[in-house]
Length: 188
Ligand SMILES: CC(C)(COP(=O)(O)OP(=O)(O)OC[C@H]1O[C@@H](n2cnc3c(N)ncnc32)[C@H](O)[C@@H]1OP(=O)(O)O)[C@@H](O)C(=O)NCCC(=O)NCCS
Image (cartoon, rainbow, N blue to C red; front, side):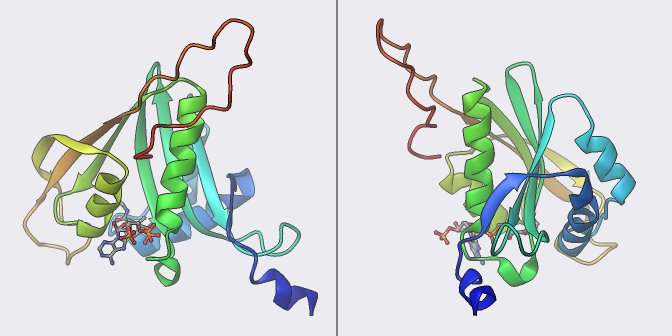
């Protein structure tokens, strides 16, 4: 019953690979009205400063399917969360938060401390997640989304909130000590 035992392993977060693109397109399509084709996702992933993290279940040797992902673009010392989605069946179990924290740790390790994202104002779940991670609303774009991402087509264009999180720079290593592992400050 090794397979059964593996199902209790915690989901693991890994860098996305080229073969993940179709899963990512599926997850995006399940999560937003505006779908992204595999080609669009592949193009984004190949862009400068872009990385994607996926979350998988079970044993490393078993299922490669992704149940969530986050796509991030870093330019100079800032980064933008391009999208994040968790499979509907797996929502509300802390996976979105884990993905965001992993992305933030990766950025922090590269000394990219400012992170921006856009979220539809009515997307309470995503807003709660970002606020919990220390993101603050710093601006808004009215009528930005042609239709609310979470609602029916033809609805009133929705407002996009721009949120920002600034991580505390790591302390300078003291002479003669090793620079310890990077750790975003506690809200992350
Ligand atoms: C937004 C999304 C990625 C969150 O992923 P998730 O795995 O469900 O979120 P988590 O379980 O990690 O929850 C983290 C926090 O989000 C908030 N949250 C999650 N589910 C919630 C719900 N149903 N109601 C209210 N808040 C909720 C809470 O603050 C939660 O922390 P808590 O459980 O300790 O209270 C996921 O809901 C999703 O894929 N939504 C569709 C796509 C989307 O809207 N993406 C964001 C675009 S900007």
